[in-house]
Image (cartoon, rainbow, N blue to C red; front, side):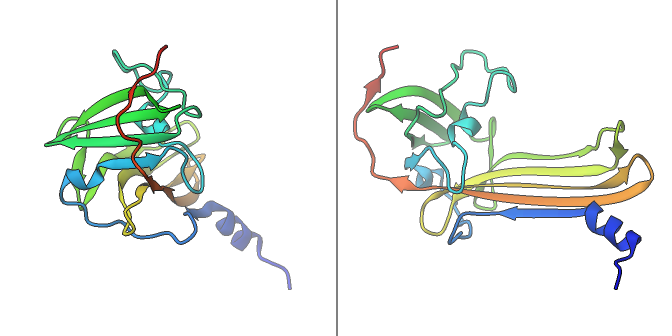
Length: 189
């Protein structure tokens, strides 16, 4: 029995991907930013660095007065909360190699028990195709108290303005909560 060329074409143009760590836990419902306070591994499971989200590359974002943090050097991220202000510190060799503050209502929103960092809809670039796209990035805690990031994206459209296509991706990354390192001072640079 031969597969129909049309069926093969449709299978290629409907793409989807879901990625998650082993024993992935759902998000917990964080209603108080203070619940985020703690120290987390910088290296995520299954992959990635938490610092890439907190200190994006200067090539991607222009951060006035914010020094880049060497992502692979940071062992952990400490989170301190005071009201609506969240202080994050990158820690390596028992000292702080970078710190940054985020304010609720300015750099992020607390929505559905998660920190909503990005939620965008756009039109796919008309060069290769055309159609709507959706992108969402959330940060929060899972039900075990570990840090969790979820990135979701979807699109539908016409490839070369004539071939229908659709795609979906969801990626979860866990950042394990670890023991707090205590009082630390800035590293000598």
